Image (cartoon, rainbow, N blue to C red; front, side):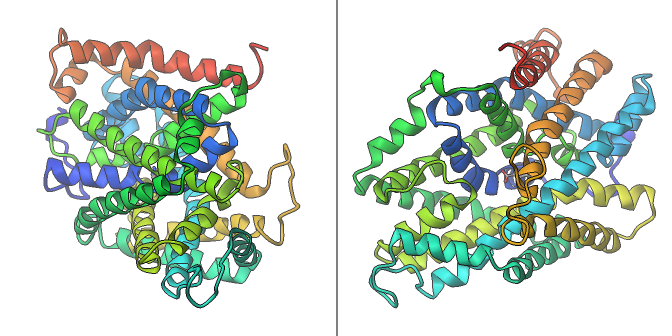
Length: 462
Ligand code: TRP
């Protein structure tokens, strides 16, 4: 019986802890760094609408499925999938889902850590007042600030140092188990992040380009929408909710039985979406007010935000705090990306947790060098589709591996798992309207949606 299975890694102390940890996983660079620049590259409004649809119709149902599979399996995703497949009398090949998730996690964290390193590097820069227009350098202009970013990323050694610091911190936290310092960190982080986002929005309103930013973010022009941008919207929905690779599944494994999965999932997805939209509302007015291009890519926040803080009273202080909070947000995400692999090594390969963290961390650190060099030594190396190695890794993971993982998670939960198991995990009767809605979404809407978007991205529908 599922009820007797226990996790050897421990359990969250309460429903609230799980919400914090899962929200900590979901809210990260994906919301504040990635969402604005991807929305910018894909033309804004229509992309945002598709993104929101994907969150609601695909993201939330898959999140519920992942938590449910994790809590029932009570192990790392690889072992949980094997156990549940056995329970449902299905082939053990379902364990592959755990494997592909683990590989996706390695690839994602390899570049996530490099970018988190950038945000860490911007903490001392902010604190030193490098961007203040009225301080050490008069007139820290947008051009100057973007030049500083260029100089920074063109230096591989510097990027490696910050990347190493982030991987070190990630390994340290994971080695100690998730419970210790993390609950407290997230507790302080989320309110702080919200607060400074509102401050930034206040500043953005005062720049006069607020309506232009709003218009860009919310007025949908479907003529700009291509199959590729719809795929990017779905990929971003998976990425931002940490879905499709087992991160939420493994967090679900540590979830006590009495926690309601449906409302918890909606809360997490809602908080995550709110942070992304607030970040967009703060950043796009700054883009237009400073004459920057919305499609300027990964550098977007590293140019717009220093500009904004540079012109703000107390900007050095708030800017430092903001980048610091971003580092925390990235760390609470990073640990969830590595946890499926670490927990598997502990369960099945007899690793002690610290050794498992070190082993995975070193491999991921090495892979991260590909991303480091994509911004300097290998900037012109674009082997496929005019994309650098960083862009390829990001595309492969966000747009292909995560949705594919989500598709199979949906298929397993909806079609292979017994309905009694649903009822036990969700705590909803079979006639319950939330249950019927979820079942309909996960059985039909999610799989068809993912497949449809894949097909339209490769141009099947013209
Ligand atoms: N969701 C996080 C963010 O938006 C990143 C993240 C954490 C993630 N865990 C994940 C992405 C698992 C994909 C899969 O920054």
